Length: 450
Image (cartoon, rainbow, N blue to C red; front, side, top):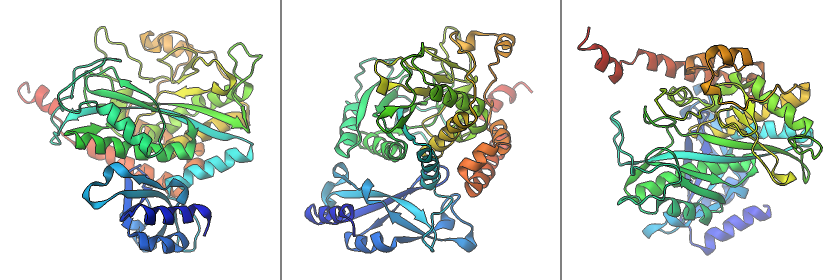
């Protein structure tokens, strides 16, 4: 037994923790868990916990359903704020294995680990830093009616409301008590919309943190009588919730994206990485924006006097927030990074990070050339102007995104055959159900007129 495992067992005993939740994630990014008694944990470290993989989206067919959840002791964390009368609880993320001890190809954590190992072979460590947006709405409704936001605030407003008082402060305190560092938080553009930015970390840690973040934020919201939703676009006439993500590659202690001699301080590695993100953007969009609703955010209703920053066209820029990939201003070499703005906060972070890393590494391997940057508002250009400038649109709906992904050798290689095939099947089923559903819009528009 290694030291980290010993630390976990000792902590459980010293703090009298009665429940340990073993967490893992299915292919769609849904958090799953199984609770074990502390007395069972020592054997779980040695042998894992048996689970029925056929009950989990995308994990296994019925005739190959036996799988093992192997706790990762480096992810152990006590959840003191969930204690109550029953005492504190704790959690660990798990890697999903087959009965022979090999990694399950359908485990999203394994998909990302595989991509990180490929980067490591080239001498790179992949770091990510997400800006997570979400809405706070009054409890319910879950019947499809329009939810009521908890406030009427706007961008950076200091809001006060009767419910969810000091919500962001409580959420940030809860996150920091379990070791998740928060950079800053603020009110976003739309009523009820919030943003909390996590500090940068290696991509696997960040993905684990995002899964934990979504759970904690929802728990804090429920404790204050409201609901938090990471739905990309809850309102027709308001901006949606993205998860703008900053990416960087490190070579040891050196930032591989920095070059002091370049006018923009970007290295050739960074330029080829950005080019890879652009060349393959349409191919991986189904992963970074995996829900029918995701495309309502990317291609919103155009309203008068509304500023649209949703990155719907394949372009990059230095200070341009309408671009798909933005290069933020940075003052020191260690801060050199790129920001992908299309990804939404309802994605599976393991798969999203894996495909973005795969696209960037492909650009480096093949020496992709970076096209000229876009410094104009891409949305303000006419279709003819965008076409002349070479700004191709992202897929406009989930169906188109699936069709493009299906033809992508890169995404198939990054995800692996099992995840790739399941993801396509599941998303086709979602689209088929959606396109056959008669919506309130259709009844409102046609019932009386036709």
